[in-house]
Length: 431
Image (cartoon, rainbow, N blue to C red; front, side, top):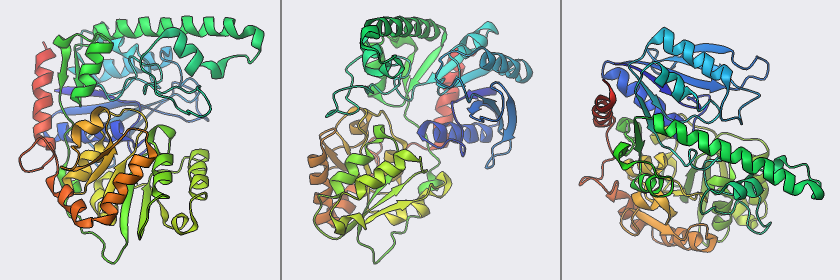
């Protein structure tokens, strides 16, 4: 088959979970004999929006990448110039199927361009972006003592006041006018997204929790909604050799943004008693990273020096560069994640995971079986669970040995089988 993969970022330019997964399946599809191209975005402020640059995957040169520039309109949900460039790729490549991973920073109307040509569209859900304009059900504007408050569900007026108030004029006598404007904007956005959803042939959820939530809260038809966990190149997680003569080490992998809860992890680490350290991997994000270092500077002096800031790693070297340097992986997200790659990757390397008792995080970690769970957003309980493993490294090793819950041998889903499962799903929608 000729498959066009659509994703809002592609490694190494963008290196978060959905981007890494997209690259992984592109490599797998190539190995299965398919012709794969990628439509994605970059943000070059010195080039016009809509400019297209062609590149090739540095790890699999058979994957051709079309990078459309979107430096100035990244917060729109529809963008005609992106639609036009996508249409040009569709007409030149003439794929048999379009597989979307995310449309944020691109354009929702890409689906319509594909359907206009009679192409089947498969959509892998990675977050809540279709039913939450910001994607994570976290509020930007809430009481100051509750930064990034959790949102229970999408409502047009609530979206206006809690997430789009940053665009208000600031004049008190204009507030109702501002609210009304953004309430209408959100209503238009949600109506349009629902029309897009109707055009998609099949949705894939990598967590049962995510599938159920979309079907329950967004009325996604169960007939075109399936569960399929991510697939992995297991060889990347092989060869872990824990560095000796180090203190007990907690590790974090991910982006330096509030939703990931690194600030809570740092605060919890500051409460621990005993010889330990915390390694934080990820790309520097300027002010956000500086703010996290400032939080570290408030810890007791004997803990400040034990927080180690590690560089961004390449996923192909995760066993050597990450897992060999940590005893426990902590996934402290304050948003309700669905199926974090890092949880699976750690389990394959037989590293225990501490994560929250929410969403897909708790779906893949069972308390005291292959890791530990703590009360979501509760720093004290996170510190308590971290202290348990610091006090009992043998228990930590025991938890790590269980691995993945949904296989008898603890092995996470293999990429080859995952590609076969994807091919079967593709055949359901291909004429």
